[in-house]
Amino acid sequence: MTADKSNAYGAKAAAAEPLNDVRLRTARKRLLESSGQEDAIEAVREIVANFLGSEEMGLFQLDRRSKTFEVFWSFGIDLEEYDLLRTLGEPGLQRLMRGECHVEFGVRDQAGVMAKAQAFIPIIVGDQTIAVLAILRLLPQKAGFERSDVEIFKLLSHEAAKPLFGPTGHTTSGAEGPGMRV
Image 1 (cartoon, rainbow, N blue to C red):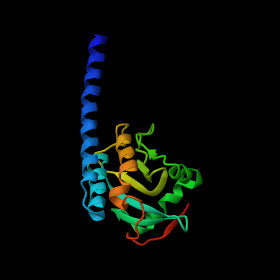
Image 2 (image 1 turned 90 degrees about the vertical axis):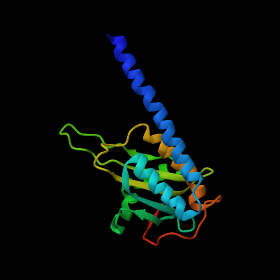
Image 3 (image 1 turned 45 degrees about the horizontal axis):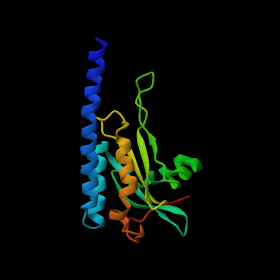
Image 4 (image 1 turned 135 degrees about the vertical axis):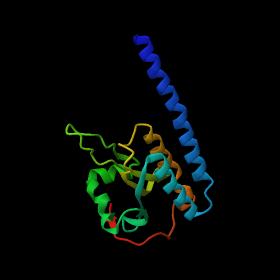
């Protein structure tokens, strides 16, 4: 009987693996085929909505001169929430600057209440963080981020900069908003 259980588990894991590969290939293709910055922003929005299950996100670009994160683009969140990077504190911001994602997976506590799922993904050129993509509040049908979502986070982190900001990662366009000091 145990062999059957392990085979069933193995079959589920094997089925999930190709599905995750398809998600990654599709997301990568959508990013690489984007034509211009507006289309790249739409590609990121589609990837986050369709593969990660959120329609609340913001992109914050690092202004190297002032060492602040400035609002570049948002979808589904209000201007009042743009201070959300500050909630990570200095250690969290430093991890983002080192290129590490900050993910709160959103699990149920003992009372069955869902903890807030959110992710902060550094957008990297070379070894430099040039922006942060904040993903907030998952859609009701998604209980929390899953381990397989980490691959999408990594893809966005390492491959979204060029379509969004060009090969050097520098652009002057984007939405105006309050800054967040690094």
